[in-house]
Image 1 (cartoon, rainbow, N blue to C red):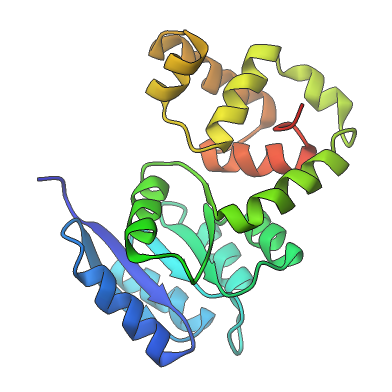
Image 2: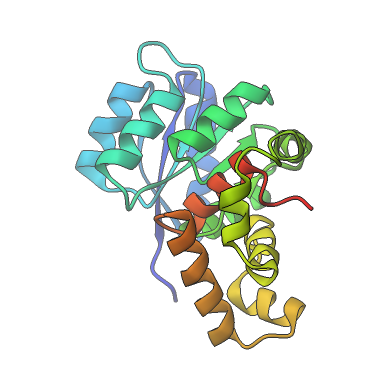
Length: 216
């Protein structure tokens, strides 16, 4: 059996926080290692428990979820963050992604979807709730001409690969969709990361969204 994914839940509403923790505790491959009620407590929790993935609320007293995400990604780069909120506000979406979140989900997601999102983010993918995907695409369309020099750095095939990464596709799925070998896909991804100056796949997706590289 695969090792458990260590998860922490950060939300200032006790019922929501404890309810999420209780639901996730029922999932065999997830281990809830802690809870926090605000951003500052979240930082202490990550330092003490080293969770793999954090479910992070946005609106909290003191340090909010965006600020906490930015600080966690800076200090603990191996911990990934999924922002989980009732808001599909445009600025929350983009501020969260720019802060380093690997996912943005609404709190009405069911437990199976949430568990799948945690697994995907833990494996290096990025996740966007379908309710906010159109906002991301709209922003990308408006930003399409933001950096033509950067866009020209990527070949047409690399842009194809990047768009599929942004859709959450695995290397095997990308290889199948584009009729490539997995080794070739890995090479394309290495070139994409290098050309965009990205740290990892999630970072590349965030840059792609900001600069309109995922839309043609």
